[in-house]
Image 1 (tube, rainbow, N blue to C red):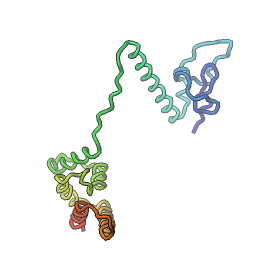
Image 2 (image 1 turned 90 degrees about the vertical axis):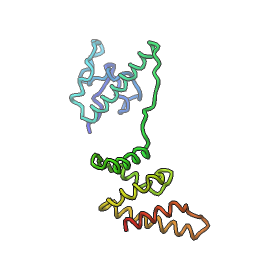
Image 3 (image 1 turned 180 degrees about the horizontal axis):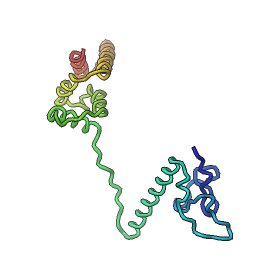
Image 4 (image 1 turned 30 degrees about the horizontal axis):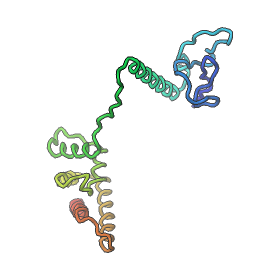
Length: 194
């Protein structure tokens, strides 16, 4: 990886975060190659980002991200000066549970338009024994989905269910009474896949 030592401000300060850098500095638009820094007696405006062509791809990405962040900050500042409120609304993202249950329902209802999604299947396999995450009305659909499970996913699911069943049996023998619904779900999965 190329070092960023060649990147200097027109005044001679090093790039923040590099040896000799002082942390947060001014804007990215002020950064230029060391070869472009004019002599102190001839103050001229250097063209920004001339050195991006000589920088490695990783350095280019870092500089582009910093520039984008600075542009966004500048736009936010202009909006605040104009009196327009900048509300930070969090992106409405759906939870993993909702996405996985929608995936399961689309598998059951629209099988011809359904597409396999590894992350959704993984989420379902990890949370299938939890009644809060996968409600009872969806568990029967999940069992039907598990019938089509093949390969290593099937083997791993069986192994995990067997281990969980042993743990629940041991916990049942001790004072801790396991949840009866969880034991029932583990048994159903084992009966289906074994």
